Length: 419
Ligand SMILES: [Zn+2]
Image (cartoon, rainbow, N blue to C red):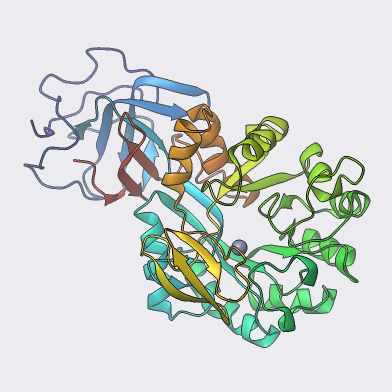
């Protein structure tokens, strides 16, 4: 049975609608072919029948009303009803750390490439995305920031994340060693300025000369200072947090391991309430037990699931370039051709969520906090995105009962139509 198109009753939304609040005839399944016109921004519509993950918890059979680009409180006259029994509706995902997808690199691609990468991740539920660069020479990165900042200005990106060049050669991962440099605050400032107010985050090895001053500079400019690709001790990491660092770039990866006499950055980052820890939940970057350790210790409120995706995400195996370095992707795992370091992921956030809920047994509400609310808060965007509340952008994800993605809406338009 196809979704029906009926007039809306007036009534509150984003609350448990209870049985019988949807008009008769508004029953349908999510997968049958549509028989009526697709909703447009001109046609307000109401999602009914699904479990909806709200900031206050999951509401069974809640209604979500969308009018134009926004979630609204009351269904207008002549709204269209889309019934989604057995499904979940969640806020759209927010990815803080993402280098590309769909065969396109945010570090080196054309504008069209970058847009294709963004679209690829939207198809997987990421409705807000920060573009990450990899290490390059400073002038090249500054130029890149100019291009990406234009995409941020037109609303396609939520900002720019510079990962490198201010990182440790001891923990360089998939970054070119010859292009690494100490975090001289003047150089950090150069990149922030080149981003024209769109720099969202800079990953730094804060133990390097200039590191602490650079953290202070970033904090003063409202840019997230992220500790990562670091060889810092426990004490050095604490100093960086005191100076204003607020994020751990992919906790565990590209930093010294947790030692019982030498706890290193991991203990300092996990124990401090001022830090949100990024986790790459692809089954390759982290053992499930390490993920559990971090999630339980930090709590859902201090975790951000990220992809750290590279070009092959949503595209396929093969040879790629990550900045100037060659990468081989086999069975969805990206490794440097030279040396075999893991070189980003091919993860999409819908898969991160699926793993979190089905394998890691993380409650879906906690997973949503880590996928949407926390990164939105970090970016200062929680008044617009990151949860399903009236007044916010109509950015949402529809999953089936097995937590497989079936629909994506961004600013009131279906990117993936669930019907
Ligand atoms: Zn990265």
